[in-house]
Image 1: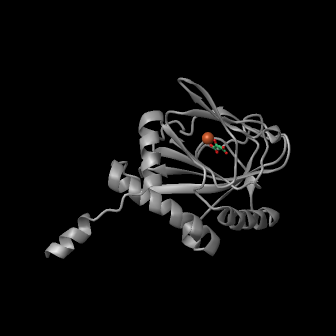
Image 2: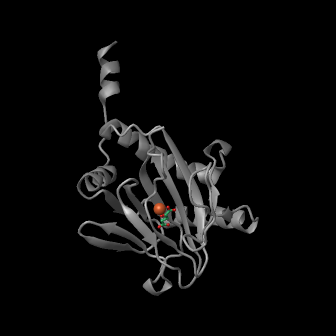
Length: 212
Ligand SMILES: O=C(O)CCC(=O)C(=O)O
Ligand SMILES: [Fe+2]
């Protein structure tokens, strides 16, 4: 191997925003980034979500894993559509390009060993919520990091409800579903809840980085 080749392999550009995510995760087990997507990107993703939602391709969310699913509206009331990266739809490619860049950074710097991921669009109509829960199912410890990206209009007000509440040792953390924002947290540790949506439809992409 030549010297240049060697240097190419070890050259590594530090990314400030990703570094902050990592240090947040180490110290608090969650991180909030407000400008992960630009408002323009949010509106592109939202448009794609709404087209699919109007086509009726969303389904009522269920609780449990693939083999053990149960629909219980008293626990969660959102509608979801899984996103297939292999379909190579242009808008969703934009989404995965950013997520994959973060994943490869995490894998280079954190030894998290993220091998797979899964993401779905979610719509919470007015009146719906997702009761306090942990994102891991019985006998399934593959989900390491949960990620939620919000696709709402700019100016989501507290009175619209739909806050994400993280239940932390030091008290609760309430997070508004603002466009461009991503919340990342440890799936196996942090219990959380989506408060009832009081007005408007709450739009998001939720997903998990998994070890296999
Ligand atoms: O939409 C959110 O803020 C969180 C969603 C959630 O907890 C889930 O889908 O498991
Ligand atoms: Fe969750």
